[in-house]
Length: 267
Image (cartoon, rainbow, N blue to C red; front, side, top):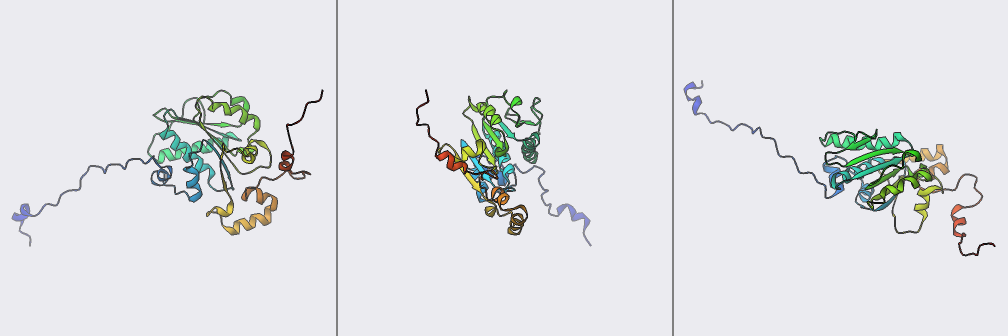
């Protein structure tokens, strides 16, 4: 039986402190560490290589279902957080596709505990307390001529964006010397994406990711795709090959190697 009179002499254990554990400082110096520790996204080897590229002009030619949009969203978000006066523009063949990339960025921000709001002007947009801004635009030339001061432009599914739209949006980067990324699965030997990829210019940093290099795509699925979708479609969408249009008599690449400007005009 406990002696009540001695209760006051019993050892008192310290109560747990109510003070919250200090939050771990955000890691922004390395984008892959930022993705893993803050966004809880563990990029594979190739995704890490793309994220760390710091390319002024980047070309990503990749298989379907590699995670291109997620990688692009992380590139955009990191840029918004580290660059003063950051202005990110994403262009896709449709408004829905462009909005999806903005939606991913918003999701990451909410995960970080950041209140998300739009800029009040563009339907699909993000405005951070720092003033950093991101907007999504469809591939429509008429609506894509009124922006400037862009510090990062992402052209998603670039192989399906018309050349006229690309010509209209490139000047967005004129006054900032901003970065430009073209990301896409091949769509034949045509358009600005293929021309940039096939050019010998060292201006572009190129990345190729085939389905066999993606650890998340099972071999059985790829075998089924090859059997059911046909060799041509499989080579384009999973092996990242730029193919001539079906029924073409001549190879476009071969024709271009025979073109010359060394001739005198007719009088």
